[in-house]
Image (cartoon, rainbow, N blue to C red):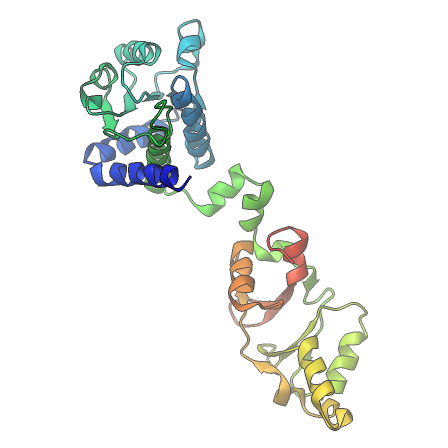
Length: 328
């Protein structure tokens, strides 16, 4: 098992080491197609066809319109899917797959750019490379399956190069996280890109009290409890409404349990026992920023503040667990 993983890893590394200026040309062609309102049509046969489906899906999720096309079906009517603004990304490790070469030849004659990915020692001189506007060759690859030569390392290398092309095109076109969210609003990925203020259950002015830092611990707790259910932390502010500290239920529990005189602890000014300048999130943060803070600092309650440092709300780790952004 380890030898197979190492073989595929070596194949990907060799692709990275062998990339030349033609990679920039390929990115130019794909970006030009997308900027013109066209689609990148991806075609391969067999295992290369399956890799093509994944590359096409990656392009589409990164803002580049794309569809996979079966090269055999294309010769029987599917050429109607292509427009003058489109381009073809053709995949064939040998570079000699008859159906893929035929499709590339027809489209190139019609004036559509053809970017191809081939392999092997002769990939740059293959039939597919000769009918391509730009050819990228992953070179000779030692398959992880050395007994039957089933495509393993070669398809992994082809997929890695296809994903790299998709990412490079998205960066060229200044594709943002907000753009990704528009195309992928569902699932875990979409959830991580939501604004954190969208998932706040406890919001200042609605169901989250903020207390002056001049109160005692008991006074602050009593005032906060008057609203009913509250998060597991109190936000303290100064006279101008700027957040000055955080006092959690855990802080209270530790002080009462360890104190020789619990009543005296409750009578102390909360400013003396609160956590000053706690870690916060800006109101512009995304859910993924909150997840990162929880994982790095194990912080269960995260205050969210505006540009002036005034509290907007508080994010409870249970909110992230409920949306399956983090595990309990």
